[in-house]
Length: 569
Ligand SMILES: Nc1ncnc2c1ncn2[C@@H]1O[C@H](COP(=O)(O)OP(=O)(O)OP(=O)(O)O)[C@@H](O)[C@H]1O
Image 1 (cartoon, rainbow, N blue to C red):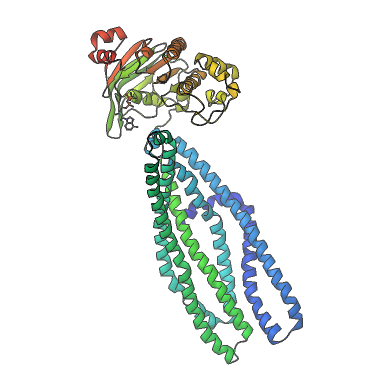
Image 2: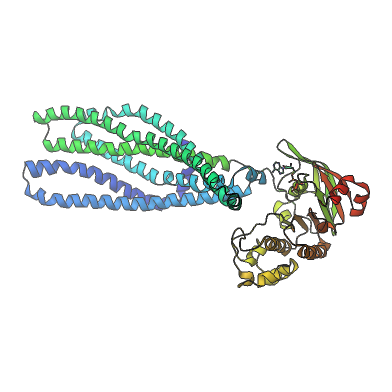
């Protein structure tokens, strides 16, 4: 708990004024609650026993004034403290998302998108009330407790002793409950993120689910997660709800003791009925804030568990670090020198030596799983080599500023990423929209005609998954996007696989044309796609078996001959 507040208290510095207003609200509530309890004494003694007429007409105004002050106090406290809580969570959510985006590709491959969504949305929501309402409620209830304790001691220190002596008895069971709450909160949050993961998986794979009629299987899988979530929540409720009866029983013991001791004092005339009633009212009122504080403590456990999960991600750091040098203006070659890449224990690439020069198209071919995409992962620094180095001219790729590297590389993969925005914005993604350039690259990517056939042309809004486009159209949009920034390095990883032969051959010509001033890598399984390649590297099980022109490989590389014959390049 201490760590939690240590982490969040610095944020409060930005909300001094809001905190001041809510503090006024808190004080108003605490003071008017104690005032209400105090008012019982004159109500009984002056009005009912001494028959004081003036008090009779004054008391209703006092009561209205007390409750108005309490209502007003509660309102301004709730408003300003919620403002603080909402704003802190907004800032933390921004921070978390920005931080997550800086993490390595590896991190995203290991985590479910749904799990990350759950952390950024649900876990942060759990913190929100802890940093706002809980803090305010804690302050308010503490002040109320102080006020009421002051009042009971003022009325009768002896009775106050009997009324309060049982309180410490509650500490042990309450702390046990809090510990259990923390454990359960952690589990409930984890199963909540399982639910989000399961949902996002189902919606992302909806086509497969429908095509295989596996709706029921998926619904059953989901209901397992849902049931676990329900069970943890119920366990948490069972634990949390114990706080209230526990406090009430302890309160009843105190109340019973006070009735005996106080009753005797009233009977013997040592205490007036009004004082005794006011004392009992204050004692009663006292148990409500105490109960609230202990249930707040349980709620805090939920926030602490959520915060630990958030800190766990915040503590992760990118291992692919940017270098300080800008990418050379003119890249004449990329060389791979004795490169090895391991994904944890699995060696995906071994002893890779390859050179690609400006103006060349280098084709990477080989069986599935051979390591072609892994090589691409290294060029964009999604991963770093575990041995050897990649040189751009003569600079190690690790010394180059990642932003400047990636700004000069365009990559088109089999999976086309579309943003829920206009076609023009999708093409110029990350850059200012220059409509003339957008049209130019749409023409190059052989996409102009179908875009113009749409009602709003380049201003047509695409949805996130590009469902208003065919597979081939999506690929053409992706190729246009890749060409838009006129990259120094162009990478096409199965970028034309969804195109028909005619479009594919037209695009191949376009690539041939634009590749003059770039270094181009093409991964393809179709022979026609690589026919313009300056050289072909044949991959097998993470190694390059041979490098050469098509003719050279057909003459000397049996693996290439096999691929060629089976047309499985
Ligand atoms: N992020 C990753 N973590 C662990 N293993 C990976 C990862 N990416 C790829 N691999 C493994 O590395 C090997 C090479 O994969 P890679 O994607 O580079 O092959 P590829 O030649 O591009 O195959 P394909 O033609 O099917 O796309 C495969 O065995 C694959 O399972």
